[in-house]
Length: 317
Image (cartoon, rainbow, N blue to C red; front, top):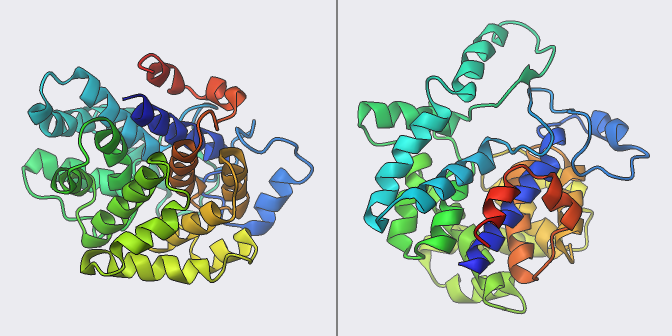
């Protein structure tokens, strides 16, 4: 239980730390924002061009994990968790929520130049489609086109480390939020790599390759990791620009792997992820989860204190 909560805390703090500089894809602008700044984690001024939330709050990625965590601690039976999660997901992200309110506000911007960040949360496409499917009682099928982002992985973090590591159960959780093969495979790969770190493996990435190189299911994941390993000596920001600094897999996964293999601790990995730009929170969540699993007391205490959701998690540690 403690180890799982610690991993969830690592994911949560990483998201909150990167959040003010989330989705800054213009490299020149990002450099100008952080130039000469000693502290770029928990950047005091929101520079995300699309949405703005209070400092210490998390994006829609980690908020998915928070909804699952709340579901786990309030469900009386394990068998009730998935259905309760669906209900809580609709309540938290759906009609009547701040997420839903801002979704309607965003429609005004479709035909004009985006001039300012919206105040409040940003609803992800995977989440929107999930709500629509849950309410219509149909199976989730990604997005308008299948959205290969990390929402399913985020929902699965608390489930995997606090409830069950059974592959079939975890796959159901991932596909509840993001129903595609890529979402499932890369989400499960992240969880297993974090788990290997938690188990005390000296090199979790290499161990994952050894365990799965002959498995058809993880064939593309292993290939992607092997490609990244060849780039270990190259600058992380440049590699992220090449592999993918957007939200979708496999590029998002590969860029995070590069950060992991070129970093030595939690703080270094998150700072490096922020500097690389783009969807830094989604990559940061994976990196943060990994390093807090790899080494105990790896999260800066000052960062934990700045993270809004950390207090609730700490109540159970």
